[in-house]
Length: 122
Image (cartoon, rainbow, N blue to C red; front, side, top):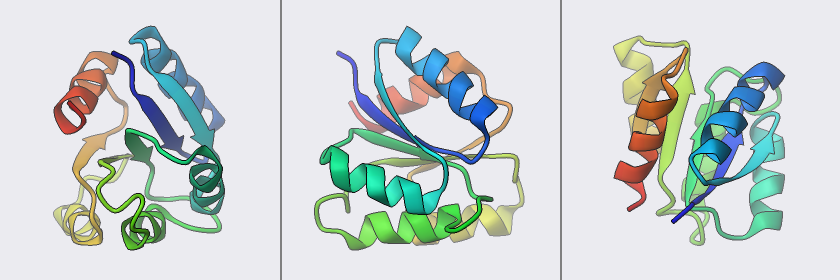
């Protein structure tokens, strides 16, 4: 059964690639251009099953977005996958400390991405 997935990334190309990979796997995709927009989309959407967010974005970066999601009782338990070009252990730890569920390095493999969604949101 398909999940509702919110993707938050400032790159239109990356949002398009995520949407294609996820809709092909039967998921419904909501999109946001940065953390601020992600907060707005999440507020309008109500429930989503999984969030995929970039780290480096204007207005509100991924860490701030994760903090916001985790501070809201309605979204506190929503799985969050970080999808970024960053691979430094300190940045991964900072994302984990903020509440990220998992970390995927760009460019992503669509099959592995869909498998990760299945793992974090059965």
